[in-house]
Length: 210
Image: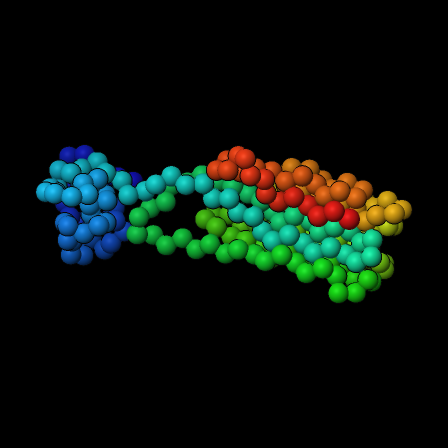
């Protein structure tokens, strides 16, 4: 949203700044000058016509990765990864919650623990699935944003479409790799991560090796 390009009142300036319509305005304040684009000197209502306090932004929301299984267990799946572009409005609070990674299996018989979810903007990404352990039914990789890799004789954990991929199946020697954003896990290697639009040279959400 932007202020009108024609006649403008202080209530409309307040609305653009995220204030109540009747709030007092100091024309020399940093928020008003920032909206007007006049850092110093005289400022008038005309400087505030057709101005927007919103700025474009890209949310990249990556959840915590899953923990691996012990002793040839499966690798942990990557935390779910999502991104979206939006406009941020001045005066608005945006809450960001960052999920932690899951802990590795505390016992050879148990699967690794899943990661925690992350949330930002309108997106919530699911934590990665834990890697399979060394007993039935815990040989299976656990589900998550990307699934955990399987232990031998277990099945890979499924990922969530749009967030990640499934974990890998195990070989006789190695646990399966955890799924990643760009690819599923292999028989030992974790799935590849992916870049974000905001940082095309940086890769996120790779799966753990088995």
